[in-house]
Amino acid sequence: VFEYESDLPDALPDMGKILAVRGEASVSETTPSQGFINVSLVLKYKVLYTPSDAEIGIKAFEAESAHTMGINAADATESSECSVTGFVEHIDFTLNHSRRVTF
Image (cartoon, rainbow, N blue to C red; front, side, top):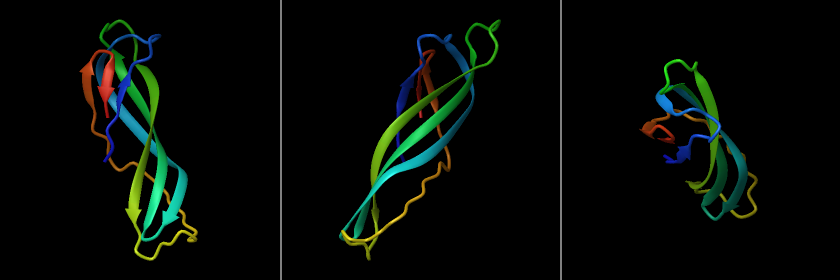
């Protein structure tokens, strides 16, 4: 579980309501150690929203966040070759105010 706050880019109008959020994960680095695999990954978010000004059409923006995590792997050693694939199972989000959202 990761948490990230993102501000709306200055060029976009204030958010009124978030319609949808999609996310994808990409693993950038894996480092095995004794009984453990350290993973660096980037989460990319795509947000579709309606602006607070109802006369403006639907807008979208993207955000991304970098994270690290550890995976228990009893048989892993520093010389192990490993492959890790990440995916986004679910995204909770909160519209904190018209220019900030928490994922």
